Amino acid sequence: MVDIHHHLLPGLDDGSTDLETSVAMARMAAEDGITHIVATPHANNRYAFDRERNEQLLDALRESLAREGVKITLGSGCDFHMNYDNIQDARRNPHRYSINAKQYLLIELQDHAIPPQMGDSIYDLRLAGLTPILTHPERNPTLQRDPSRLKTWVQQGMLVQVTTSSVVGQMGQVAEKMAHKLLSDRWVHFLATDAHNTTRRPPKMRAAHDVVASKYGADYAQAICVDNPLAVFEGQPLPAIEEPRNLYEIERPSFLKRLFGGKASRLT
Picture (tube, rainbow, N blue to C red):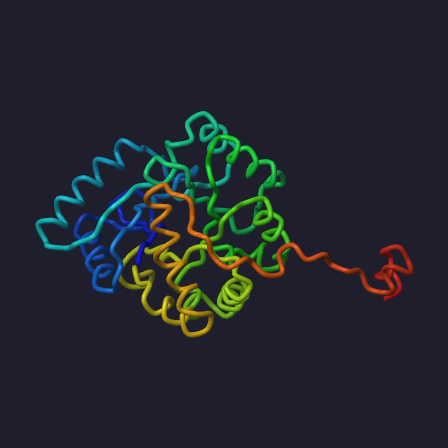
């Protein structure tokens, strides 16, 4: 399996605190069946993003893993926060933030403040040659209240990554329910761990993979845990997968809305 969202690099953000923890996280991931990890430190106003420094830390971690006999292929990216400065810089330097300096970019939203021009920002990133991947929408309180916003973005070509721990119920009932709704509708393109440590946010995918295989089919589990994330890691187009459901259907207005020109709600 391939994990494209993982806070593995030591001392950069709220993920791994030191090299020893990073090695332990990689070992746990390998034991769970993960073969590739993209290290994705936060890029936001709180944590400065420095690609060169990250690559140096990644090289040091590769050496440590080789000495420890941990067989994991590492890549680099970031957890890109959708603020104005980031977006403008990504338009000028698209590969500075993207996964393995190719075309895919993980993006994260603030819990309670979605940019008002989100659709325009997605368009700008795509115009710069980037394909945005929205991380853990099932955990975002704003999207939990109004999933229709996510529908619009997916229609614009944005991809979706759901957290493995949400699938198995470790992020609360609301996140679990939304994760399974997205999976059922085939809006999910990737599962990833969003691992931060070996305890509360561990790097494990197997249990979620097995849940998806059982409920939605082995082919879909293979696609979102292996084939699609591997294509992202290598900078390749995603393999063809099952068409999403309930994405482009026309919503028919109710009889009262048609009768009163969309003002039926005023009668209640």
